[in-house]
Structure formats: structure tokens, C-alpha cells
Length: 455
Image (cartoon, rainbow, N blue to C red; front, side, top):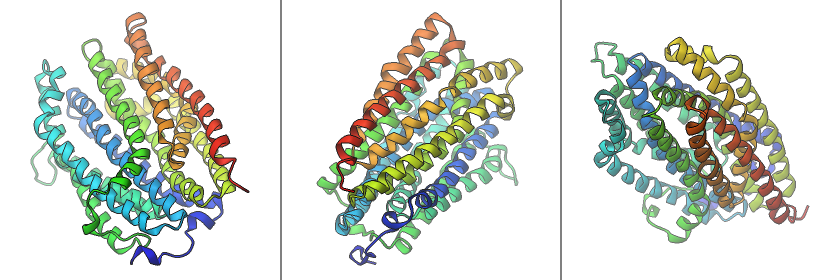
């Protein structure tokens, strides 16, 4: 259906706010929880191979984060622009934005294909002294990068659906990919059903297979079910104005998430010669932490199109109600996450088969880091609001200060003065700083661009 025949009003502008937030966010929260569960299950299976296998996956994880950063950031920019244009009833530009999202997804994949083919060995140079670890890491990294086209297409389709208010289909897509991953993991890793045991290579093959199947399903849904915009292969060519607008919001998001990848990679490089235990703890923590934070990111993904649409439609009350309700929800999730990591750390760690000494050290680290969750919830939610308002640069400033100006320097200082076992205190310091900055920036943006909207 041509985008010009859209209904006169989208549910983003008329459904009661609390019900709308739940209807948009709940499918995304569920799908993100399943995705986080897959990340944990994947690591649990790999942990049964050897500690080197777990370390290899942990060292490759920053590149996977970088791929997610580029795909999600581009998708956020596309979804935010689409929602604003739909709110303005500018259906032509909404369609152009959706088609540019596909074009940029293909370009992004090409970059990581080149990286996987020619730079995987260089990336694992720091682990060269441990030949087994390096070999497993290189093999895993090559597969997840060279076959990442499924990831980029899937996430782009999800964000287009979210931008038009179709959150349920986005959930179904993530469920399809995650369930396939979970089913294939033990079959390929351990050689079930008569297949050869592939180890970490099997984990990588299971990952990309789930992504490719989900991407194929997503393309079918986009063409057959999404009525608000029309995808046309002939329109998937560079459109300078739209690309600039998409990346005005998306690039800060990419840099923010890419910074997470860079900081994690640098941290692993610093810690590996000093404490392989800390590398193991950090890798396992990020898997478990994703189970806590993924629901909040799912909430964010539901909030962005709601705020963006109503900002385009100039509806102040719906914007403020969305922000207030979502902030309360995000904090409730973070409180539950804090309790989970502080009360049940050994139960969570038992899945990864650690020694008693490793488990005790990891439990202490989890408790320290989890104390900052309630602060990070505020920063994460407000970051989504900035992106919805087209002010992604605000989120970027906060992320750069949090990661580069606070987290890494404090971590290095603690490593050199208090030992590897105390580096975890850097995380609460960084999250409290980010929270304070987020509140200051949100107050300023509310006064400048929200409060001035007529009631």
C-alpha cells in the first residue's frame, strides 16, 4: 500500500498513554529478555568447553557490541525520523526514511565484512601468547562478522516496525532469532544428532543462523504487513538530506554504544596481562547484566516513537505523561535487577561453572556494580527521550563523559592503587556522574522545547 493512503491518525497519537507505553514496550521487553537469555545460554554452553573458550567469546564481545551499536544507532535514527514525520503527516518523507534505513544497513554490513575477513587476527593480537584462546577467538569473530548481514537487516526492520507502532512484530522477530540460536547452540557446539562437535565455531554458526532466518522473516513482514510506509528497492539509494537527518540522531547513539565496545576492549587489554580472573568476571557480568538492562532498553525502544510522534504532533501532555510513567517503570526494573545480583549472585554464577574462589570474587564484583543500577536507569531513559526529540548529541555528551572521562580513568587508577579486585568501584562513580548530567540536561531541554508547546 502506498504511504499516502495512511489512516489520518496513528495509535501513537490517540491511545491512552500508559496503555500505549505498555503495548509498545512490553513486546520489546519480552523480546529483549529472550535475547538476553540467549546470550546467557550461549555463554553457559561455551563455558562447558573450557575457560579459554569463555575468555575467547568475552574478548570477541566488543566487536559484537560494535555491530549492535551501528545497527541499533542507525535504526534509532530511522525510527525517530519516521515517527516525527508520521506525526507531522508527512508520509512521503517517512517512506524515504524507511528506505534509507535499508540502504544504510547494507552499507554497514559491508564494513564489518571487510573487518572480519582482514582484521580478525589483528584484533586478537593481545591474546597471541595463548594460542588456543586466540585460535578460538579468531574463528568465532570471523563467522559473526562475515555473516552479520542478517543482524543488520533484522534490526533495521524491527526499528521500522517500531517507528510505525508495530511493536508486536518486532517482538516476534527477536523471538524467532533467539529461539533458533538456543536450539542450535548445543546441537552444533557439542555435536548432537550425529553432527560433529564444533565448539565455539558452532556457537558462532548458531548465532548467525538465527539472525539470517529472523532477517528473512522480517523482510517478508515489512513487505506484506507494514502498511504505514512502502519499501521500494528502487528507492534504496543515497538520499543525502535524509541520511544526514537520520545520523543527526543515530550517530550519537552509534558513538555511545561504540564507546561501550571500545572501553570494554581497552579494559580487557589492560586486565588480561594483570588478571585473567577479572577478564572472566567482566565477560560473565556483561552477559548477566544484559538480562537486567535489556528490559529497560526495550522500554526505551517503545518510548522513542511515542515521544517522537507526539513531539511532531505538538502534544505536550502526552510527551510528559510518557516520560513520567516510563521513568517510574525503568526504575522499578533496575531495583529488581539490583536485588537479583546482590541476593542471588552465586546461583547466577553457578551456570558458568566457576571455581569457588572465582565465584566469590565475581559475587563481590556484582554487588559493587549493581549498587549503581538505579542511577543508570535514569540516564538510560533520558537518553531515549533526547533521541526522540532529535537531540541525540545530549546523550553522546553524557556517554563520553561517563565512559572516557570517568569510568576508564577511575578504573585504571584503582587498578594501580587498590588492585584488580577493587576496579569495580569505578562503575558506581561513572553511573552517578551520568545520572546527574542526565537530570541537568533533561531539565534544560524540557524548559527549551517541551514546556513551550501550547497546552
